[in-house]
Amino acid sequence: MAKVSEADVKAALARVVDPDHGKDVISAGMVSGLVIKDSNVGFAIEVDPAKGKQKEPLRQACEAAVMRLPGVTSVTAVLTAHREAPAAKPKQPPAPPGQARQNQRAEIPGVGAVIAVASAKGGVGKSTTAINLAVALSRMGKRVGLLDADIYGPSVPRLMGLSGKPHSPDGNSIDPMSAHGIVCMSIGFLIEGDTPMIWRGPMVMSALEQLMRDVNWGELDVLVVDMPPGTGDAQLTMAQRTPLAGAVIVSTPQDIALIDARKGIAMFNKVDVPLLGIIENMSYFLCPSCGERSEIFGHGGARETAEELGCDFLGEVPLHMDIRETSDGGAPIVASAPDSAHSAIYMELAAKVAAKLEGKGAAAGPRIVIS
Image (cartoon, rainbow, N blue to C red):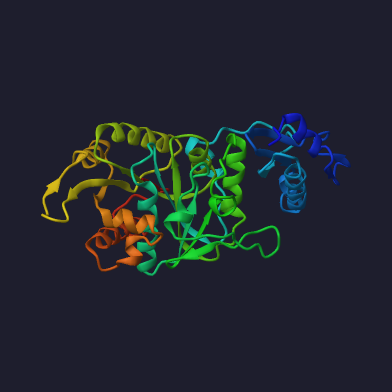
């Protein structure tokens, strides 16, 4: 297979003309963040934010031009906003930090509360927790959406049992997929399953903006966001650009996970996102044969951390094969076994989150869920 070079990609893009500039996208300086990984190519196209939706045909033309190159197996192009420097304005007194950040947060049309489920460490059950919370909120009568914000490792398609690509009614917006009573959107619906995401920060942030605001969510009471692990661009984009209504931290009991959970809590505090509380996942193991309880990862660390930091402890979720098997099978346990003891645990967690969103027993302000 022929090896793809940066010069090859730029030569292909130089044949794509932007009608507004009357020049090709390379000469117009519109292409940035070009990344080539083996046979996979990714890049961003900088456009006027006022014409973002009108530029979708240009984005598609750029992808098609590069896809025709020998040796290319996948191409991902995203539109990113480029703004001219604003004219100088008279100086105004600076707004308080919290108010300044809040002014940057734009509502998502039709969406009520946005909850971010996140963790500063991978492998703690973030996605499983987010999905079962979302399904539990739906069972309570809420209109619920689920956004997979993990660009590098999207897991919602697998965990929700969804496949195929979403429909676009007008070429500009996307209809979300649906399963188990909730609507879902993930970058995983738009790429092949084995395609590596090799994007840099600006491309990730642009993709998140489109997944949030170019999706026809309809009327939702709650949008649950499955956050990626860590404290990087994706988390900051969500916290600074979205009016988050709540935050839940999910951690396992062991010290190494709690150290990272504290980092996540500190980051959200810095961007004025208060917490709904902490969930201890994989809190204990009950032997299915003899019923003996084993605390494999320790126990109670998340509760102690919540008490120390002055935030609520929402509850414990055990480590159990049924939770893992139903998640891997695309049928979250709250949907597939609604009368089970494990489903009851998630329903109780969802009830606490819903109560806080309605202002019962929680201070007003934005919240985020971290798992």
